[in-house]
Image (tube, rainbow, N blue to C red):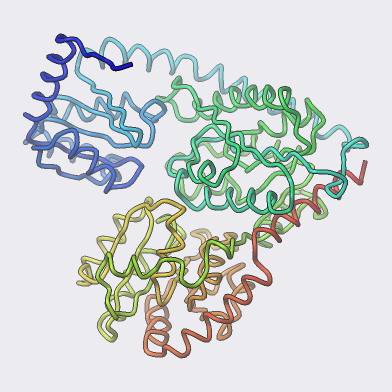
Amino acid sequence: MSSISSPGVEKQDARVDAVEAAVTSVRLVVLSGGLEPARRAVADRYPNAVVEALDKELLRGHERYSLLRSLRRQPCDRFVYFTYVNAWQLDRFRMALFAWLTGARRVVLLDTEHAGEEFGAARLLVRELPRTVLEVLAAAPVLLLGLVLSWALELVCSARPRRFPDAPASSERTLDVLLVRPTPTIGVMEAGESAHIRGVLDGLTELGHRTRVLSNDNLPAISRAGHELDVRRPGTFFNGMPLAFEVWQNLRFTLELWRATRRDRPDLIYQRHSRNSWAGVAVSRLTGIPLLLEWNGSEVWATRHWAPVSGWSWIVSVFERVNRLGADRIVVVSRALANALVSKGVVADRVVVNPNGVDPTRFHPGAGGEAIRERYGFGERVVIGFVGSFNYYQGTELLMHAAPAVCGAADASFLMVGYGETLSAARSAADAGGVADRVVFTDRVPVDDVPAYVDASDITVAPMVPNPDGSDFFNSPVKLFEYMAAGKAIVASRLGQIEEIIDDGVTGLLVEPDSPEALAEAILKLAKDAELRERLGREALASAVANHTWRRNAARVLETYDEVVREG
């Protein structure tokens, strides 16, 4: 049946198009989702506008007041915030108020799902302000409820050991594993966490077990890989109060998880540890289903050192303590994390070290790199590749400080794949070093395309930096295993688990962390020696296939589950 638009609707659409075509100036702040997708979204909506991109870091702290005075001198037609999902973008009222105070005629929120919302003075005063006041008034009761329930769960979890006499062993039949991702995290849709989740699911499936995911955010890479994904997105209430938002969403998601287990009871709940969430612990105790908690780091530590909300750490620690007590086993990606948990009182036998892995059928030599090299015009240049999130420990800015020495001594280009908090600083470092024309920043790319970008590189780098407080480096970089499986020569920082994975001089080169000079020296050594690159890549590939596949990772998960149910 064909659809027919009424003349009234057509006229209204025409008026909207005319108004947006008349917009000539746009200020753009990318909160999440990537700069290039944001520019495309703005260009589609405002085709005739000149776009000025502002760094979101300028909107934090006291700098925002001087920025406000500066922007008011030259108001724009539209002040646009770009984010993943408008509906649950935090601090909407304050962001819209700031933009309105700059003199912008309209404030607009755009997102990756092509949704757009406009804010004018009337909406701010009549709708958003009362809503924000209500959220402020309701925040304290919600936080108190979350804390009371946390303390109650602590008592339950401390009471006595659990037994699972009727649970099947993984060798007896196909297990039904429910992977739970309870807290929405901006940027995970096409990032390392998504790749990790897919790897665990792929490994369990390869071993013959059923997997499904309950998440409160969309994970496109998981759906594309054919895994069963049930999305329960968070509501919009409390998006002006981030801490209350997380605690409230934990309560909502716990209910969703309980309903999911009632509809289709799994044999195992496998939950990624997330800030201010004990959904897996609560439902595991209510239903008697074993719980394995995947622990990729302390959220208390991350909140104190990486998040602009360090004052939350006490409440975060209450939720984290419940998870440490309530999980039947805690699966960690590195020995440093295991040691940290034991230092917090977790019995060592309840902690299992299970490093990340790789799928050699996806990451391998010849995975499509020639097309990437042609797209960016690399020709015969030596390409130094980095793939990952641009965040606080990845060392992307450090790599750009090393780039001038490399480019000055070799015919080389850098391929920087990813997006994150430190992308702007990395771009600035490349500009300051005079090598911007030798560096390609791709922004975020789909997880499915990452193997081709790795394959396009001659040398791959993992220039991680030490933790800011001097504690042991606890990360298990997925990129490292992907580089190895692709058969690439690797330069990596001599930190934590990286030293255990890379055999210096055999499967890669290790350098002192936080030293652009040492990093540049190692890269140049490989750039000038193709035979060495080939030998290191060949050994790295053999090691990855033999020791570091997601299948082996999944096998360790199943061994841990069997150990838990045997105790009953």
